[in-house]
Structure formats: structure tokens, C-alpha cells
Amino acid sequence: MTNTRFYPSLFSRIILSGVFLSSASLAMADNFQAFTAESFKEIKSNFEGEEFLLGLWSVDCPPCMVEMEFMSKLVKLNPDIPYVLVSTDPIDQRNYSAEFLEDVGLADKESWMFADSFVERLRFSIDPNWYGELPRSYFFDSNHAMKSHSGIVSEELLQEWFNRTLNFR
Amino acid sequence: MKLTLTDLAAIILLSITSTSIATANDCNETNPSNSVSIHCGDSPSATFDNNGRLWTVFVQDQHVYVSHSDDLGQSYSVPVAVNPVREDAEHNGENRPKIIVDADSNVFISWTKKTSPRFTGEIRFSRSNDGGKTFQTPRTINDDGLFAGHRFESLYLTESGHLYLTWVDKRDLEASIELGEDYAGAAIYYAVSTDQGASFSTNYRVANNSCECCRIAIAPSGTENIAILWRQIFGETTRDHAIAVLTPEGKTQEIGRASYDEWQIDACPHHGPTMIQSRLSGDYHMSWFTNGDLHQGIYYARYSFEEDHPQYVFRVDGRAGAGHPYLAEHAKTLYLVWKGFDGQNTNLSLIESTDDGASWTVPKILHTTAQGSDHPLIVSGDDGLYLSWHTQEMGYVFEKFTANGET
Image (cartoon, rainbow over all chains, first blue to last red; front, side):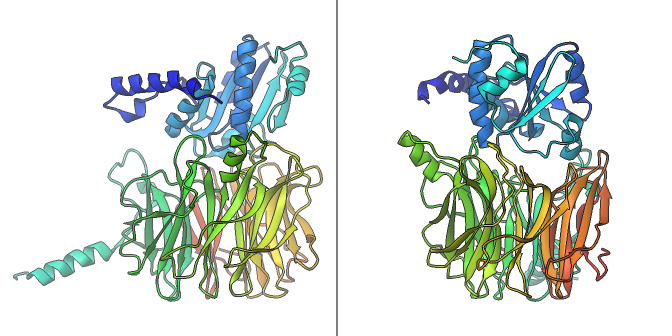
């Protein structure tokens, strides 16, 4: 990991915080949408007839960071991968999450954050059989048949899920 | 009537020591005037002192607050801020502030201060020597001076008066990264105070390669040692549980494997175990969550270092959505509470055992809520056990378990 990687985002943060000096909560621009018990249906309907990959993560999950560094490289090498991120951290703590996505290079992806303190219901809306462990990944094929994985995704798994050649390096 | 300065001082003193009553309904955005209270705050812990006074600690607006109750949670004192300067105290089910009151009415508080988005943190400690009226400036107990992960602290006071702090620490991971070496997970560290929290020992390492994101359970081992139970990485990716005995001198005396679930996962379960020592056998009662190849769900087992293998392994709840068990014992009866979710509601369930964990009653649902809730805890009092459970709907629930399991 080199320090130079972080300079652009740090620079942009200084500029942004200067612009929004009056409001600390706006120090980071982000594109988070509020994830409620209805949101997963919405995500699926947006991808109707299309495959997509859903990545669940949290700033409190060290293995998530490893996975997202990996996924960031992967989506740069394969820009056509439909990748949606859902953070299980409460949306009122969006600054931490925005900072991480900016640093890891995933800030431009479709992104959601949990927006209901009844997290059991939110988890259930995605998958009743998910216990909350992170990272958690779901692949939906074009018929929206679901495959899931707990823990860091591997090249082999993604290759199998997408069933086509992906560029990993 | 003329008021003297002494009268005024007395009135002011009275007003700040009088009780405040806030209910969960007071805690919403449309009522910005709502006071700081355990009902409105987050992630409380609770304990009784030797006089039967209930003490609670919780987080609200980046302050750790302490509040006590002399009527078993009907009303609470005006909360006192432990940290005068706001800091990002962790407040979630797995990572909450802790509170212990010793026989001399010293109040000990610990919490984890989050220091960046990348799961770095510091182990913070403060105490009150004046019965909770004021708190000393919080101190950082991890002594490596690193901007690294130190999180998921647990606090325990032994019969001998040794105050232990244990936590999950990433200093060894950082050192490995510097050397370009791989390091799985984090490490378990601890420190001990022998002077009622005035000072702490250097930090001692218990084990490398622990899971990074689960609470540590503590129970006594003799009068001055402790036993700890934590999620450990066995082999490359198996996240089952380890148990060890720690001494005040910094020695890890015994270490064993407490669960064999074969949970092969390179992920954060965010599900820490619970453990108490049996008064009948001296063994350890344990409960935990797993989603392994061998076991899936919430489990109970009894462990002794002599046998070095979990006994009486029992699946408490294998349904999806079950989690966060908590164990306690009173009058030779074991109580185990946990949460489940049925798609609509969260159910808080209880089972009991009167034969040291060999057999259990059928589950009884104690509470149901259709809103958010914290992990359930059990607080031991002289006359019995109390449920400590923070909920969005009911606020902070503190209520006694009766003999037949009713609350």
C-alpha cells in the first residue's frame, strides 16, 4: 500500500470540507441511498432480467476491506460487472463509510446503507438465512436465482458465478 | 423566606442528584428537548453495587454516561458524563461500555474509542472515587502508542480485587505488515490493575490470530485469576472458540479449545460468546453462535480444563435469525436468554437448567418486539437475576426473572 494513493482523496476532502465548512455532516459527498425493508425488492427490480452482484460490508469488518480492495481492482478491469454495495452500518454514520469507499476506489458504485435500527428485518429482507456475518456476497443470475457466500470472495467463485471469463490482473 | 448561600447550594445539589424519568417515547426526533437518559441512549451495561443500587452506563451523543437507580430501574439519577470531551465511543451489541462498582464504591468504566473508519481504536478507562459524582479524565490502556486496532474490551473484577481489562489488539498484525508477512486476524491482550484502577500493568499478550470482531467473555478462575473465552482462528480459517486462564502477573496459564464447530470462514461473525463459572462443578458454562460445518445455530456446552473438551453440547436454537445468547446462574439454576427473528418480530427467549447444564427446559418467549433492539444481558443481584435489554419500543427494560422464568 503506498501513501500516494491517498493524496488525491485527502486533497478532495480538504477542498470539500472548505466548501461545506458550515456543516460537518456534509464534509463528504456520497451517493448512499437509504436501505429499508423495501429496498432489496427495488434493487432487484432495477436489475430485472439481468445478473448482478451484491456486496454487503461494514467499516467494522476487517475482511471486508480486503474484499473491497480486491473488488475495486476487479471492477476496474471488468467495468461491465454490475456491482451493488450495501453497508450494514447505520446511514447516520455515512461519513466513515464514504471515506472508505473513496479511498478504496468504489465511491462511484451504486451504494446503500442500512436506514432502520431494526437490522434483523433488513437482513431478513435480503436473506432469512444470513446471520449478519460479513463480508457477505450474493450473485443473482438473469433469472435472479441466488447464490450466496460468507467471507472474502475468490477469483474461482466469481468466475463460477458469472460463468464467463473475467480479467483478474 | 430568605435563602442563604448554603440553602442555595443544597437546592442545587438536590436538583442534580434528583431522579429523572424518561421513557422510550420521549426519545424521538420530534422531541429535541429529550434529556440524556438510559432510555434514549445506546448499548447500556448494568451492575449492582454491594448496597443493592443499580448502576448503568450507556452512550449518547459521543458521551459515555453513568446513571444509577435505587428502585430497580423505575427511575434513574441524572446521568453523569464520564468523558468531558466528546469521543467516538463504540456503541453496538458487540461493543458497549462496561461498568463495575467495587466494595469501596469505586466506579470503574471502560469502553472502546473508535479512532478512524479503518477499525482502529483505543481501550479507554475511567473511574470515580466519589460514588459516581465525578469521573477521572479517561485514560488509554493499550500501551503500544500505535494508531491501530484495539477494540472489543471486556472488564472484570476478581474476588481478590484485581481489575482485568482484555481486548482484541492488532499491534502484531501491524508489525507483520511492516515485515511483509501474513498475519491472520488479530491478537488477544490484557492488562491488570492491583490498585483499584489507579494504574494498570503493561499489556500482556494471550494469543495470536484471534477473530477481529467478537466480544470476549470473562469468568473467574479462583480468587485472582480469570478465564476468558473468545473466537479464535484455528488453522487458516476455522473460527471456533478458545479458552484460557490469565493471571495478574501476565501469564497465560492454561489454554484450550472450547468449541469444535468447524466454521470455515474468512469473515467477521460479529457474534461473541458468553461464559460463567458453575457454582456446582467449577466448570465453565458457555454459549455461542456458529454456522460451521458441524454445528449451526446457538449452542451451549460445559467445559473444564481437566477434560479439555466441550461436554453436554446442546443446540439451543438452530433457526435462522437466532443469535446473541447470554448466560447467568442463580440458586443453582442456569438461565440462558437469546434473540430470534421470525420475519416480523424479534423474540427474546429463555431456557433454564437445574442440573448444571445437562438438560434444559423448553424455550419460553419473554418479550416480543417489532422494532429494533440491543443484545440481551443478564445482571446478577443478591435476590436473583434481572434482564437488561435496550429496545426501541420499550426503552431500557430492566426486570427480574422469577423462579418459573416469568419476568
